[in-house]
Amino acid sequence: MNMQSLESALVGRGYLDCPTLQGIVARSGETPDRLLPALLNAGVLVEAEVLFYAYGCEEYEIEPILRDLLKEKKAPPAWLRDLFRNYISSEKQLQQSFEDFLVESRQFSEEEVCQTLARKFQIPFLSLRNTSLGADEFRLMPPELIQEFECVPLRTVDGVLHIALAKNIDRKVEIETTLGKKVVIHLAPRSQVKKVLSDWSRLLPRNSQAANGSEFDEVFLDDENLTAQRLADPSDSVVQLINQLMFNAIEEKASDIHFEPAENHIQVKFRIDGILFPIQTIDKKSHQALSGRIKIISELDTTQKRAPQDGRFKLRINGRGIDFRVSIIPRIFGESIVIRILDKLILDLELGHLGFSERDLALFEANILNPYGMILVAGPTGSGKTTTLYSAITRIASPQIEIVTIEDPVEYIIAGIIQIAVNDKQGLSFSNGLRSIVRHDPDIIMVGEIRDSETAQIAIQASLTGHLVFSTIHCNNTIDVISRFANMGIETYEFTSAVNLLMAQRLVCRLCPDCREADPNPDRKGLFRGRGCLSCKGRGYQGRTGIFEVLPMNETIKTMILNKASPFAILAEAKKQGLLTLRETGLEKVQQGMTTLDEVNAVTMDPQAFGRQPASFSKA
Ligand SMILES: [Zn+2]
Image (cartoon, rainbow, N blue to C red; front, side, top):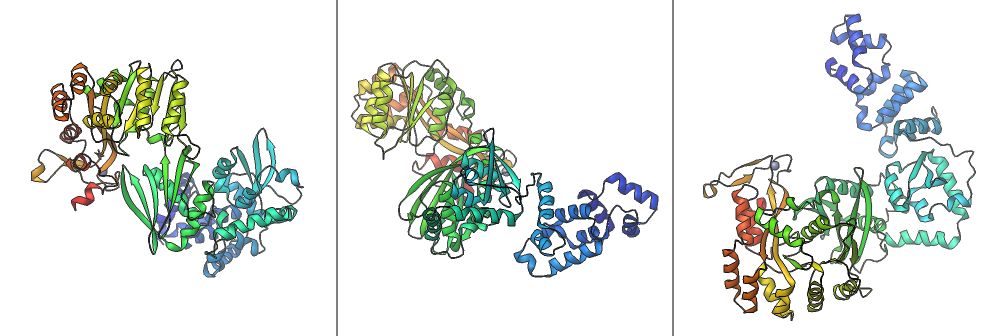
């Protein structure tokens, strides 16, 4: 063994500190190959510690507990060494944790091992041997959660629930989220938790026990390996897989996670900056467990597999709460699942960051300060329209102004405004929701989307009667909006009196600042490309920026619309006044090195191009 690496490893892993090591080296005057005996002689290490390192204990993740036991118990090194050799050479390490192995060896009690673990995780230790728990304690938590997390509710102190558990300590946040209250965890020996829980379950009314059992049986009927217990086990591969995917998706700033079942596998994809990237495939055998787990955390019906379902859940990741919206749709190869990540951290609502040119930003800012009228943003789904409107609302929101939105669905909760979600099942549509909002007479109204003539009519009337109305519409460009409203039966004089500003918007991927370079393609002299680097994970792009087309409805344009001028004539006049089309603002950004021609082509050549391939893929 190389002594240099042993030395640095021993220091690095906290076996001894640097001054101690240097002192021993200086005092003993030993050459590196004689250092080990010197360390042993000096008593700073025991033989077993060196051996454990030499055996590569870190692979077995048992080193911390061994070290603590060594320090506390001062067990004979030779004995510990044999125990450890026995463990790694036996088959046991495959099925049994080292903690359990230690308990089974009868040299350490379960409580001793548990106490050591509690110290390691800095969680209070609790022995359940002499505690008396009754029905009152078990009413502190719903029975199905006690079973799922295998925890013992103890007491509530100042609204904080104390629970004891033997595993699942890494699911504290999940428990808190599910219960909606703070939780303090106590670590208790596994056999004691098991005993308390089995005593308690005997007290449960028969029918509820049967109901709980059958729920899981039914869900996983065709997956015999999956049990309620496995579902609650953090070492369970499916739970771990989902947690890991959530975490990775947040890190990658993905907006959605897709689980798409195929004949023999499930394809996992992340949508990053609007583009779907295949991430990994999962064995088809895990499909039931996967959808079951996602349904449980989103409070959906686990037995329903033939109808679409929508749900939500919240997780605390990296110290912040993140909302997730789940949509499950049955497909030919099983349920397809999409999880939308509503991470407020990546929602940048600063108007100046949306990608407006100076002229367009000035026009937009001036118009959102109007006391009444209508501002319309056109574009396909996923073009950033709603974010633009949220930015406008955030900018003008104040306690003196009442702002009400009606959205389908409400994506981000914005402080200080009233947000209402369309709910078709309960008869709350855009049109009748909007009608009742208008009756409440707010100052500013945001309508998520104008889809039908009824909604268009009410929105126009609201803006004509002293409200400022923001909305979006599924149109390709600003000029198309004019004919679209005419087709919905809106009179041109109503349209021109109501509307202050028409905009169209798309999103393009922004070149990665860390690997942006001159495009070597001679046809693209002076343009840039992303070579692909670690910080953009080889994609060449990072984040997105908007491209806009802004058409202010001034007197000239209004008169042309009233006189039924052709769309071309209106566009020509608007351009004369300084309007840049979507494509032109896009090309401007290509010139500035903010994005590429591929990106601008993808969103301005084919207006229906959604779910498109990454530009770097199509180039290949
Ligand atoms: Zn890069």
